[in-house]
Amino acid sequence: MTNLKFTDLGLKETLVKAIDDLGFITPSPIQAEAIPVALEGIDIIGQAQTGTGKTAAFGLPLINNLTVKNAIGSIILAPTRELAIQVHDELVKLTKYEKLNIVAVYGGAPIHIQARDLKKANIVVGTPGRVLDHIRRGNLPLSSIEFLVLDEADEMLNMGFIDDMEEIMKSIPEERQTMLFSATMPPQIKKLSKKYLKEDAKHVAIARKELTGSTITQNYFEVNGSQRLEALCRLIDLDNPSAGIIFCRTKKGVDELVASMQAKGYMVEGMHGDMSQIQRIKTLNKFKNGSLKFLVATDVAARGIDVDGVTHVFNYELPQDIESYVHRIGRTGRAGREGTAYSIITPKEFGFLKQIKNVTKSNIERKQVPTVQEIYNAKFKIMTEEVSSIIEAEDYSKFVDIATELTQTHDSVKVIASLLQSQFKNQLSFDYSSDKLESPAKVKGDDVRLFFSAGRRDGLTIKTLISYIKNNAKVGASQIRDIDIMENFAFVNVDNSIHRQVLEKCTGGKINKRRVNVEVSTNNKKKSRNRNRSEEHTSELQSLAYLVCRLLLEK
Ligand code: ADP
Ligand code: MG
Image 1 (tube, rainbow, N blue to C red):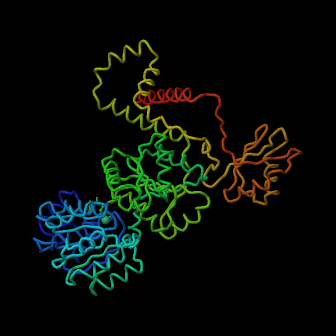
Image 2: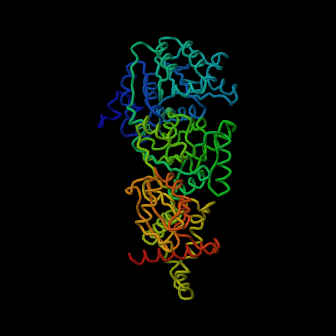
């Protein structure tokens, strides 16, 4: 299987050439399984997620075997207009060396223009509602149909198209070949395939593990509800994704998040069902060509998003159901590329996340929201790399004289810092709304760092503190560690699972006559509060400059 080539599948020369032009080297698993069977004229029921190459899996055999040349020979049904357009575009590429006319039809666009285009069509791709509309108006004759494809049948079901799908399947002459693809097989879809596909239809399924894409790294971050935005921004600032989709549950949620992110200066736009089709296509195109880095979308709107090169998926809120989670993260790591999926959850959502983990058998690991220091470090690294590559690869001889002059009149670190400032301003422009997430309370793994308002002057020792916690909270000494006793207070790490218990039971008690207050520690290393932001920036820039200089000198 691994060495299988497209030339081994029995496709004609022109198709192999078109595939070659597209840069496909080996068939994906679903293609390898479905194409040879479909070429023999056998009906297919294919189960595979997005990003597995289904379009070519049905498109190639269909184009290969289509005999009708002056009528509509094939109908492909897709759940949304965006998906219909995407299938259309992919088929256009695959038919590069064929004389076949492919037309996409969907709601929200003028029906008479589509009717006119349908007169010259060989392959029609459309949403069920609009396709049925054209059939009823007599714009779409069915007598010559050789192929019917249902792409993402479960999604069409979700979008309420089940009756339309059945109506279309019923109306098309029986001697056609049918291919039905679906990520999941709900009963209604099973029923439909039993009723309208041939008895010898071949089931082709790609194992679940392959579906959820082992190329996608999945992590989750636990925060309070009010820290979601902060956490999202930090994750973005740390990873600097080139293209990311951020998911919200509701349209209102999308609008609100877009507004907050735009206010912070992120290149982001929303995508949901209340937007006009033109607006949606415009946004999607910007996202595709890279002039827009982030899309905020609802689950429904995202079904139409089928863009390669999405490096990150963010679950700003978890979806309603597990299937949607799989769908969401399937927007990244496409065609074997690597992807990252981050879920930001509140403690309440942990149970559902666990369920997602179990059902999808995926390894969703817990991580801590990055601290500002970590983000700075990451940015420093990027900037240093960029500067180093300029030094190595570019010709800057024209600037050497000016540089010499500048460094003679100013401190060279200041010179470099000011140039870095003008070059990388945006890199350090992040402005977090709070420092709540700073030096996070959760220290390592599942530890929580707690603050005790008693210290050395109260006669507190490591031993007395451990026994105080043990006696009051009824926990074992093994769950208590990393104790720091200061003059007036103390810090201690406890297991996350018992930290609430410790908080509750140890607050209000007395250690050597002092009444003790216990809190989750939010700020171990308090920064001086009265330094203003620009001062902070200058000093950060200066330390960056030192860092760059040092790294450069070391070379
Ligand atoms: P699906 O319909 O399963 O979501 P697509 O058919 O849209 O997947 O394919 C996803 C992406 O992978 C597309 O950009 C497509 O061009 C690309 N692709 C499909 N088959 C191959 C292949 N065999 N090798 C490399 N890329 C492929
Ligand atoms: Mg598809």
